[in-house]
Image 1 (cartoon, one colour):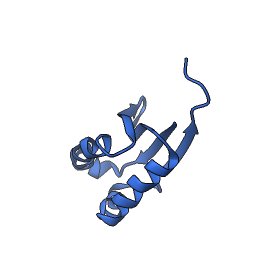
Image 2 (cartoon, helix red, strand yellow):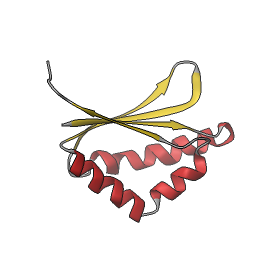
Image 3 (cartoon, rainbow, N blue to C red):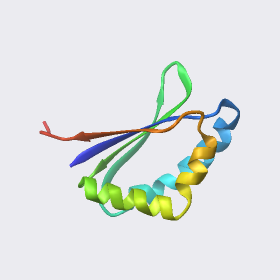
Image 4 (cartoon, rainbow, N blue to C red):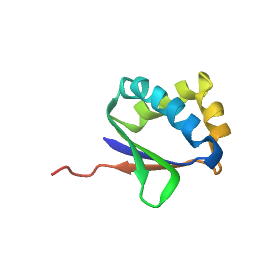
Amino acid sequence: MIIVNLQLKVKPEKREEFIEWFYGLLPDTRNYDGCSELNACSIAGEPNAVDAVSKWESQEKYDAYLAWREEDGTLAILAEYLSEEPIFRFLTVEKQF
């Protein structure tokens, strides 16, 4: 199992529009094969930071999902909203307690 932490910095003038668009995508992400959990998070003191933290069955399942988002044009649209390149952090779950 992996946890993916997608860290986004949104252009301040596009934040409200971005949130509506981005949150509209998340049900399809959560329902994608291999995704078992998805959370949209804010960061205290950083109003233009949005993180998506998701749990996936495997890196391969996430890679298939990301390829789908590339093919359907979502990643190109995402780039228009961002003030910085997105950061993808991949955490391998070693042990759950």
